[in-house]
Figure 1: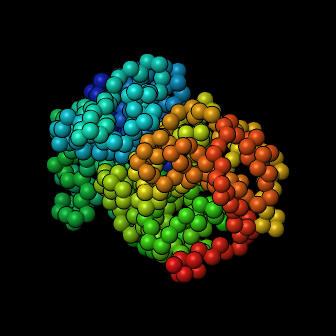
Figure 2: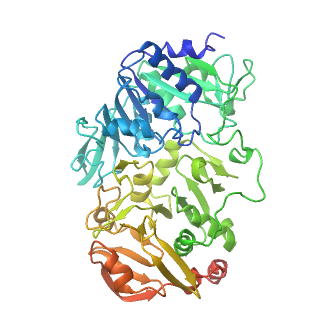
Figure 3: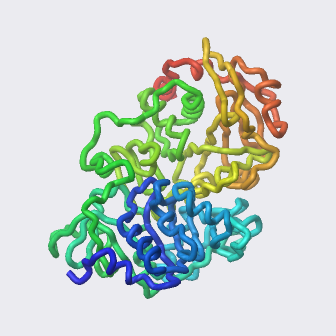
Length: 519
């Protein structure tokens, strides 16, 4: 029982100046919050441990003081490296105030880098991030003026450019599981995702560091089935028990997230016929039978709703970067989990598959689009959200469909008789001359022959070698007044520009099942 200890005892194992890697996901999913709150309390009461380097591959937190916000105190951290920052607003504010060094790396890069650190490799060689703000020739992933570290460098191998992401030692890895036995073996039967837990744990141990695990319950030695053990006890130094541990910030335990049961009907699918659904209906027309699909956070969830209503969900495979394959991705705060999944795999292997072109199509949101086809999702309106798995997914899916409304903040639309009526345009133009930050490089995509579309409620654009081309316009809108006058650049206009299908603007079936059966 030596590994089973109080939260305070486990916190005392973390030394000043340590590199701490927290394995978790946004919305409190898989978050070892009980332990992190103990760590925060120790610093506030004793000033220890401080001067930490915090790493998190996914966005972590719940916007209510959890996740990396537990570290958001002056002097507690000297540097933070994370893929996504929106879940921890206090830490984001500290970064903007130059109170510590702050960096973004792609989510897939971070989980794969953990695996390289575990193997004592010098780093990770990847094409992911080239020509985006992660590229050291652009911003190097730095979030503020004091962030000068070079986390990557450009390499040329076989005549092709790659980014080399440098390895570094991990002193402490903090993970979460469901059950621990007396030897520290950890299972995750109620977690809903595995993430990079094994890679990050191995990275710490092979760096001479320690692994601390928070679990919900304990069992006797020898009671866990070997195939159920996700983190072997040989890697675990301390186990802290939180019997009140929840699956996420809003969910105590949903057995359909783990495969314990299969729900006959998935809850929460958005069926409101509004502007979001109009965009989702047009985007869903890019689906094909047999496709393996990734749905990003936000508006792309409407694609799952359309597929369900059209009766074609069983002909596609939805996936989420955290390791979910099959089923239907959960929405909102529970994004990253999935109802009725077919499989839940380690996150690093999911990104191996994604990076190699395993996705037939990806549906992703966008905040800004410019004339070169560049997309910004990471920095706008004076805040940094980060990218999560966006760069890995958008650079490697065979086809990419970016989804969003044409303008933002105050847009009011309606649909009448298969036509779109724009009653009031939004305050902010999303089609700009130059994006604030390059999260997706149009030129890189065009160079690689990637098929890219930008779908809005009133127009559809396609990426070409010469730039962004308008290829479809909604029935009922005026080309000059409603589209060109609302853009910060003049797009190319297809000589064969078409009018979008009127069915998109009516609350009726699109007929996807019939079309697929006809093919």
